Length: 452
Image (cartoon, rainbow, N blue to C red):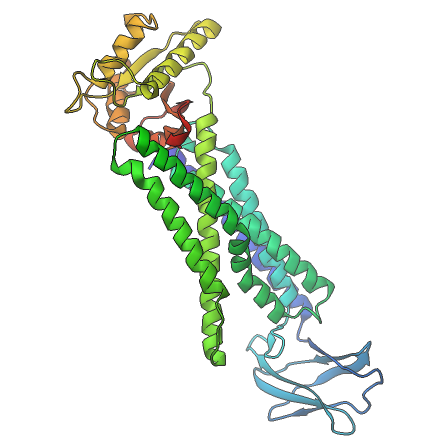
């Protein structure tokens, strides 16, 4: 793991710790402000004042500070003094039943209503949780935008923007919940809050289902076209597998979440819990998937600064006569174009490193094929080319090229390096560069749409 990545993770953890402490203190302050008073309210269907209202306790009792009627609602304020379980029933002077509830009081004096789900200081907790996810989304998105250079090419980047998207969606949902809880706390109880939060993942998945299915279909179409134009390889069918898996997963979730259910109260709670967990998990997965797409597009469109010392070109298969197919020629042309533009604008001449060994069915190393093309078709001087002709995969491309650069420059000298590959391959290649210890930015060449 690079020092930069460790530092970035450390800073993020510090930011999250500060955010968590702030939100926790906010919830504690809200709880402290409420004191020991605990308020309850219930709707009363008649217009007239229910006279002679009184509370009957089953066993243990607690003081009733206020009991009044206003606008078809009965309000009562209790003052828990001892921890324990309390059962109350509310009647009018004619002993007509008005309200029933069980109150649980913790040793710290926090009261919880079984009927409404409300507890002492609950609104402050809802607001604090909303602010936490809002802060999390700001931290993640801000950190993602700030990612520059080689440090961008990391799976941490996908996680950062994916979590940022998930936190943003969660914030929007919680903001609606918080506003409703603050604006109308009696009609929007904490049980309603719990229900909204539990169903948010399901709502998000159902809302995004058409987008995910369309994305999966496009992925299948693209991969099918790829197989028609390219030879069969395991990596060339991954898109098909992912596409069908997405469709099957979304179909399963759709029917599971919308199926009719009958059973006991306990079975219903288990069923709803499973629905909530599945909805949240799928929502998180979709956000991470969106993060991966965003990282891929950002990497493909990035253009490094024109102050490079080395330009590494990642090889791939070529024709039997040694000529370059469009895919590889596009990479080499992109690298040489960058090399020429940098030289014209800054006067600095970088060294081009065609990288790729010889496969079992190839007449020469990929590096040699690229070298010949640059010399004959693009008129690049031999002094500007340094071949790396031993690598067999992307990791070795990066590792062996790094060793050539260090051998030429010395271990301690810092150099600016970029690698050139096909646009869809830039981010993944950047990850391999980081794993190989090569500090380099990527530059993508265009390719046919089906490679995506």
